[in-house]
Image 1 (cartoon, rainbow over the protein chains, first blue to last red):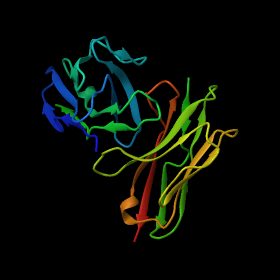
Image 2 (spheres, rainbow over the protein chains, first blue to last red; image 1 turned 180 degrees about the vertical axis):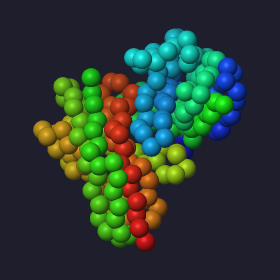
Image 3 (cartoon, chains in turn green, purple; image 1 turned 135 degrees about the vertical axis):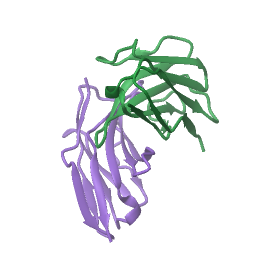
Length: 117
Length: 114
């Protein structure tokens, strides 16, 4: 079946470091991918919609200069947390819909646990 | 804007029992899709079941079924013959027709006890 691979699964780094997270669709093309943030014991909050070949669409309240999204190919979207600080520590999850219809299943990556010291 | 509300933060039942998780949503649109996702401790998001709003028949997937009440904007999930592997966070989600982004509820932590 369709699979979305997310890498790395866990990263620990010092404050001020920039961290890149990759989201790949392994056996299908995804013109759109989504990036979510999940705090402990809370729900997934949509951060942005990643659009292949164009700028990402950010949700209200999400700093686009802090969370840089690049969707350079039909199978890869990256989220870069720039100059990360402890408050950026969270669980980040990407998803990609298989197909253009909104009833098509979203395939989720396994998530990235980001810990900023 | 669309909102999804899950009013049960936690639930706990014995193995083999039936459990129902509640979900309500708010939208002014008439065409949309509803989903239940499961997030086990591994944190992988797994689709449990989905419902098209234009369909009156409730969706079923083996032990999982929904009670979709469009007028009441209610979308509950029933798990029959619950199993230990059903222990997880369950999220109700909404997507407008023509849009792919999901709006999630707060989640319900379900524990199945042996």
